[in-house]
Length: 371
Ligand code: PMP
Image 1 (cartoon, helix red, strand yellow):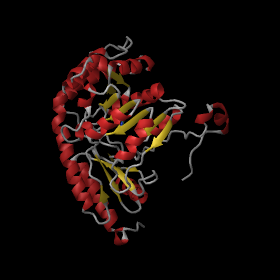
Image 2 (cartoon, helix red, strand yellow):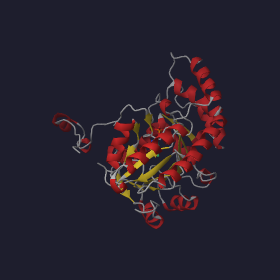
Image 3 (cartoon, helix red, strand yellow):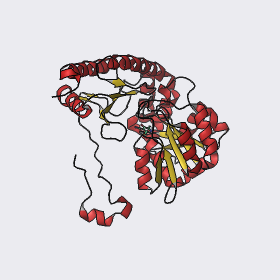
Image 4 (cartoon, rainbow, N blue to C red):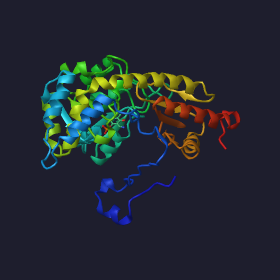
């Protein structure tokens, strides 16, 4: 694959550390079924949809937004059992991740991550010139190497871990997170973007009361089906939140986002049946996919499954071109040879993926070579 690069002119003009950056390729194709971005593909539950619609209709657009999303912040604080001063809302989890690196990373600082994980961590580290120390997961189980992580955390300016991890699907033991918080002289962020899909009581939030260097990241993009409104938030000690608040672009969370998010959070109980269905579908998909000869599936606590299949890139292309189904190809990512990530969709979407994969794989000789 030819790597896209900046024009010669731009390479000369951008900051030197940005000269090798690749222009953004959203890799987006309009397909009938899109299971490539771990969105919630279910219709929004009626009580939430109605509350959001009413809130949007009642929101004046002529005034700047409340910089700290006061009303939303109080709702989120009450939900999570923390003080409002322990919450900062952002324009998606992505903005908060970027701001985390901007505030606490930088030249001469080190970020510890456990790849394969969410690629934005390393990207934001590169933008902010933060060194990344990678503690690779076990190539077989995809589990974190606890001893190596703790060793690295002792020297780190900051750590970001993901639970459930994207794309491997595993959750972190709370004990390990506690040890990392105790070992790391800097801040430890646990990204729980997919936390609502995991088994009960796997969140590390109870540790917030005991570790003032812990930051927990959440988003409304996944379980709460609002990837389009761009709303994420962090929970942390008040002085950590003060930093997030001080460096953020004050109006990054617009009035419509704040209004829709408040409504969605107030009606969050309506999402529970959807989350339950996604969890059940995940089990169904994991079983059915592993029954296809030559397919390996890792256990997942997220709304997605990581699978390994021979000639993954070709399989992904054929799913797109012959079936109009989009999944994410990770086969070029280090540690993820021949891996695809499939978001768990509605039962209809999932059955279509299964049927298409069974057909593609059964029709290739020995289930291995794709023509
Ligand atoms: N963390 C993880 C692990 C993710 O996968 C994502 C989205 N793909 C995010 C954070 C950010 O989500 P958003 O910006 O939509 O809140």
